[in-house]
Amino acid sequence: MSVRADFKGAKLSELGLFPPVAVQEETPAGEVIRLMQRARVGCVLVCRGERFEGLFSEWDALQKVVGRPEMYERPVGEAMTRIHWVLSPGDSVSTAIAHLTEEGVRHAPVVDSDGNAVGVVTAASLMRFLVEFFPREVLNQPPRSDQAMENREGG
Image 1 (cartoon, one colour):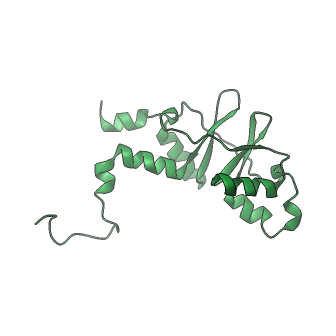
Image 2 (cartoon, one colour):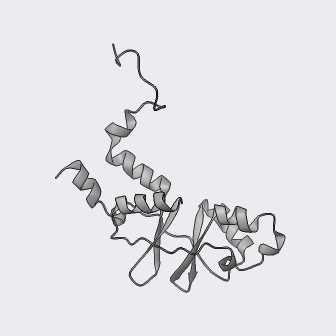
Image 3 (cartoon, one colour):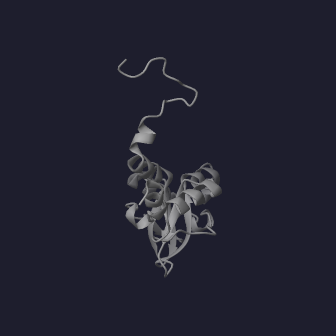
């Protein structure tokens, strides 16, 4: 099997998903921001019971809550982003990369067939996967795309 086929066949379940930090949609937004700081995460999944409803990220915090004191006590469900697509553990890594690229986001919820949140895929976790999968290609690149070495290495 070729490297290309191996890569295309890699599933999110093999990626080592970050376990989701999840909150209920009625949790106050200020409390969610403090949780994100303590947990050192860039987003939380917002749920109704176990069922995924949306995502609350640093972007949502900055755009919809910070600087608006009245929002700190409002339910996070009012400030979350409703996601019109989700990934499943059986989706390929290349599908996840395409979704994050097309949507222009850094976090994607991974939801099982029952609609329950099971993980989060991040741009950083996908980058780590690519570096591990293609170490020679990635680690041998110059720091700048326009950079060329004058002499061969070791010569």
